Image (spheres, rainbow, N blue to C red):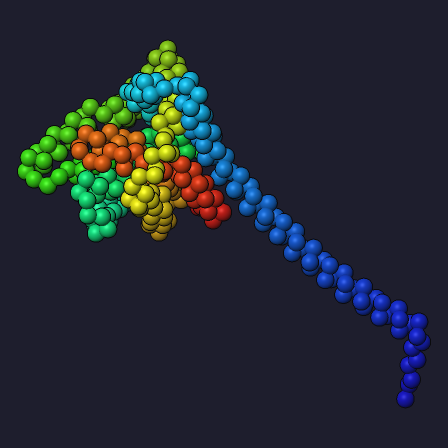
Amino acid sequence: MIEVKIDRSSAKLFSYSVIQLFSYSVIQKVTTQLNNKGKIMNTLWEQFAFSASVTGPICLMLFLGVMLKRIGLINDNFIDVASKVVFQVTLPAMLFLSIVQSNHDFSASGKLVIFGLVANLVFFIFTTVSTKIAFKKPEDQGVIVQGGFRANTAIIGLAYVANIYGNDGVALAALYVASLTVLYNIQAVIALTPKGQESGDKAVQVIIKTLTKNPLIISIAMGVLFYLLSIPVPKMVSDAGQYFANMTLPLALLCTGGSLDIRSLKKDKGPTWFSTGYKLVLAPLLITSVAIFFDFRGLDLGLIFLMSAAPTAAASYVMARAMGGNSTLAANIIALTTVVSLITCTLGIFALTAMNLI
């Protein structure tokens, strides 16, 4: 039998080596985990910073509009005139040029447009039914419904898209905006029209008038025609049009900010928050979830989300007033959704970016 003698110094050295090796292994594992967590945190921060970079400039322009109105540098008359210039001149010019100068294959956009129309129509029906159950005042029902579905796609929505995707995104968004503008106008008239044969005849007249004389629809239709037929636009005309186009979003956002009246939110709080919840939470959540289910990704999914997450359109106030609805409630919904959408849209962009969907 062989005896192995190990002196104390060797035993201590062996124990020290084992402990050192174990400690190094633990430290290496902890360091790796911390590095991974650090990378994850950095990635999440970068994604949040990207989300904020989309909504941040819009927030600043809206705030600037509020401040310029408060110090008296712009007034209601300026906002009224400038809004008309945007709607009738600069925005149509921007949409027309974005389509004509785009390299996007619009023939592949049919699925996107059809989805947008069907999804928004279904959401309109859902909003109408649930609103009539929750609220009984006829003059409020149509305004709440309109506030819940009618997004400001032509200004805020396009601004979001332009910040993320640039001119190609705006060109594709123009077709989406055109189709939704037609749908929104029809739905708004249906929601705001009282029951009765005479009211129904008036509603049809309003629909025809709003669709045939809408500068946005006309400019987008002309842009698609020029694009499909490859009709050249003279450089002098396109350059002049680009000056108008560049004015659109800054001027429109200033007017939007200047027209906000947060103090009016003290009235009709319940209906205002109800409509805001539909517009900024349910609409983007439901429509975007269904879009993900149907395998929309990238630019298409981003466009669907940004358009559905946009606040209530300013045109809803004009329509409510013209159709005899509660115009004060309409103004409250526009103001609240415009402010809160900056938060909800930032969170939505962050979530979709974190999941690598857009």
